[in-house]
Length: 151
Image (cartoon, rainbow, N blue to C red; front, side, top):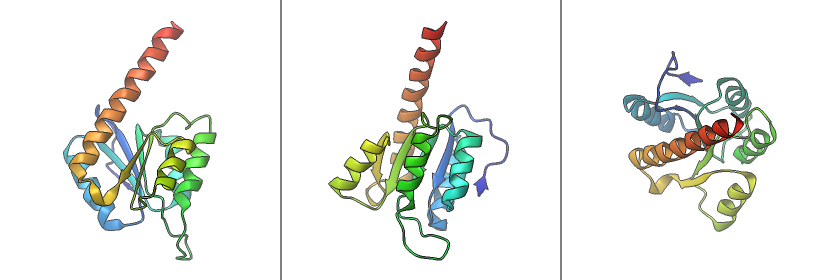
């Protein structure tokens, strides 16, 4: 897993679940240089562990991630389902970040609880970061309202 080390950004902590090392490196450098804390992994099991124990502000989730035996699999769906079922992680915003671009996949991601869907090939790191910033801001406002209602 790639990490920025000490986590202290006010902008937020992003977990990228992505099997392509080059893409993890690009987003690591770009998000870190723009003030975000960054975690990444290509391993679904590790991603589940990190999500629960590190509580990122947002997860960018690739869907097609090979299994350890190098067979192609859509493990991202399994991760999304598990995270949304876990009471400790169900409220973490997940953005499907994939090269799958079918209506069926978009509908499935929404039904499973993803907050947004980004088609990787059509989106630059800057555009992705802008979408991330909006989602984190909205989620923090939602949490603040909930906290104020409990008072």
